[in-house]
Image (tube, rainbow, N blue to C red):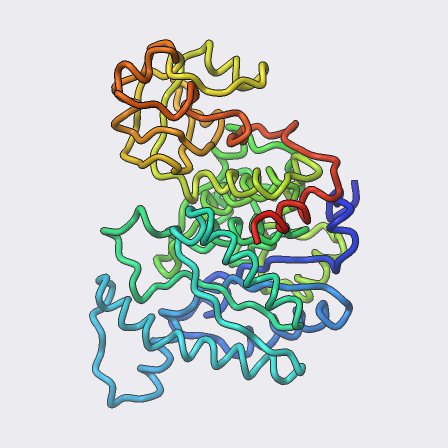
Length: 409
């Protein structure tokens, strides 16, 4: 396998496509406001890749830090609340224009246009909005511009956690999914995943390459410690899990490493590289594999149903369902979990959560008599399901992506 991982025929006929996530700590240089010198260096690296024929999408943090820069530059502005949600929203509102203006000016020095894109969790969870996001991003790339992507921090509040990604790591993985990216670069302060916290344990060793994200890898991941950004190593590993499932390599690396973006794109061993777990996943499966970022609830199934889904290629029937978690409507993307709590699959449900609670554990031929109506014998049909392991959820049909797009339009 190459440094970028195997590519489908569709991927091979277009430029190498990268999603680059830039963390708050990187963009501020560990300070409170945006560091323009650091941003200029990163933009220059991306511009060089674009000039060499790559396509680049930027998922950026830094709106709140941009707001602090505005406040610091204009003393007449009152001080927003420090640390509370309304205060952060005000800083984000002040900082978004500042952040975009900075990117616009820096990329303009390389004759490259930028396009601001604010994306929230419902934009990924809803199939039609997901397609709109994908098609818009594709169109921006087609005209040679760079999408600058962020979650809308102005309206994001903790009480609406179900409608937000919570950090830009998972957002960047969802974007890489939507555009079928070749690689996802998660750039921040730390130089990859270590065997222990390198700030505490001086004997900690950097993990150079990860083939499979298991319990051991997850145990090495910690949470954000500085309070500036919302993400941490745990969210980066989760983003890597999502991206590698649909065929994109993922690298966690320190953004201050000289020439880091181009060197990663060329396959150099910087940071921690997570290898793809599959060659390619068709577009519909990629939507389902946004799973953790977009699912609004789930069902817990018994051992027999777990085996039937994982090894038998079966649909999920009500007889195998033990419990319903959360509240969701028919057509929602839900998680399917085994009793231990591990995700078996994600899929589109044929029944709402209140319906499933009434029919769980029963034979499919009793659904209509219990509910008074029916939408088929399956809770989730096999064709609307993607296994979490996903090693065999691939396709060799080079035309499946274009066929799907034609049908969706």
